[in-house]
Length: 329
Image 1 (cartoon, helix red, strand yellow):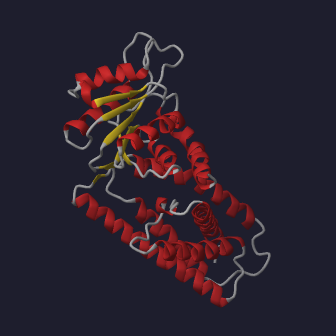
Image 2 (cartoon, rainbow, N blue to C red; image 1 turned 180 degrees about the horizontal axis):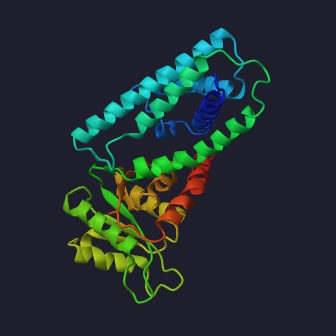
């Protein structure tokens, strides 16, 4: 048999294994921390059982990815574990369609990421069940495995942007946080800023947000604070001024999260929606998860801007920076 499909599967297994184990480190450091939800949802299993499953799966997948030469029992257990996780992913995909049918989500595409993960796990199960090749058969295998791990590290946050970031989660929220964007030198709002505010206004008018919290700042070359322009736009879109609150010091994602958390606590807001561009939302969710808030994400209306490709690529390393900060907080 050609060895490269098996070695590539090892790279995918190593990525999933390391991801699971890192998430468990976060759980040990902060009880209730659950970043494994980014790839598999094991609910309604209790937390202890979920941690045990991910610990076992993480060790087996990472072990097989690093050391494929295994006895028959380890091949069988690794393959069985990957198969079970694949079935879980399929179940998650079915849940996706149920939520869609119930109107709880509005996805950008009709295919859930869970089905892609299920296929990857099924591939691992097939490869792990195969007998190990003779030693020295493929001297390039370690490089291929490492390259696939790196590739997964690029594709995973990209997939989160496309599948998660572009999905509208339809849930009532006590407050919707709207992230700022550029105001041009002549004072008119950028396309991104207008789209974000218009999306938030629709949430308010649909009864899905009780109030709007505009967060932005005055950047270099901007004639006014972004929140001033956002407030004016929201009123134009039919939101009463009394339902709008401003955070004029939201210079970046971290600043917005830092400034809005005390407001949530002071007002007792537990159901929080966040509005931004699709590529930004995975990082926003990670930033709030770091402080124990599981926010509802709503992508702004999808007008493509010239900077979209650059911003999408920028969010790949940014996702991992925010993820590691959440794990090691």
